Amino acid sequence: MNIKIIRSVKELVEYRDTLKGKVGLVPTMGALHLGHMSLVDQAVKDNDYVIVSTFVNPTQFGAGEDFDSYPRTEKEDVALLEEHHATAVFIPKASDMYPEGYNSWVEVFDVTQKLEGACRPTHFKGVTTVVNKLFNLTRADNAYFGQKDAQQVAVIKKMVRDLNIHVNIVVMPIVREDSGLARSSRNTYLSADEKKAALILSKTIKLAESEWAKGEKDADVLKAKMIKNLETEPLASVDYVAINHWDDLEEIKTIEAPTLVSMAVRIGATRLIDNTILK
Image (spheres, rainbow, N blue to C red):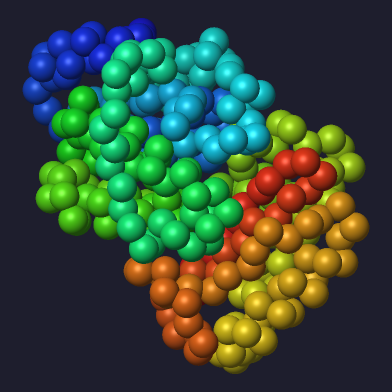
């Protein structure tokens, strides 16, 4: 099967009109890895057609962030998607998604103003706007997201509920390298030493799971233990460690499942995130 490559909004709309059956959408920014492929594989199982977007969305990057250096690997992405039986890949230009005079935004409040939103205040405005546009363009029945971006999942679920968007959100587990490091396109930024140092994130996640399993229910105590563990790695600089209710991301004092335990940590110049959901 040859995957269909779609490069314009107009072409995507025309293509979608030809599809008769269930459509799955996997929104990505390209630089695809096995974490993305877990989403594609599930989408292929669930749907008659699978559209994957590989759009590096400029509106979700803040000033001084890595938009210009973000890895772009179109040839490899297309080959990987074809191997995993995606039906089509959408690779638009920013000027097509945001044409001259563009000035309409979709914003979700409250749930976006903590964790990643506190560190990156314009980020989720860009995410919700582009994802809403992709929902409109593909009219997807199912859309697939990874748990690694847990706050993004919560934000998109709220947007879908609040705006009555007819799409089912499917959340897939974090895919990790054999070392335990959560797979991420940004892992390509890491030197060999930094990649070794980055294992402190997954080790700290395991610590949190272990402490909770042993009966630790005090969120502040668990958070302090996690920060202490992260600080044992000289190359690590902690942006935040947080413990929140999984559904609405409200901060909690006493851990009762389901609870999101998440962190953002800089390893050298590279900012990485990881999380677990205590169930």
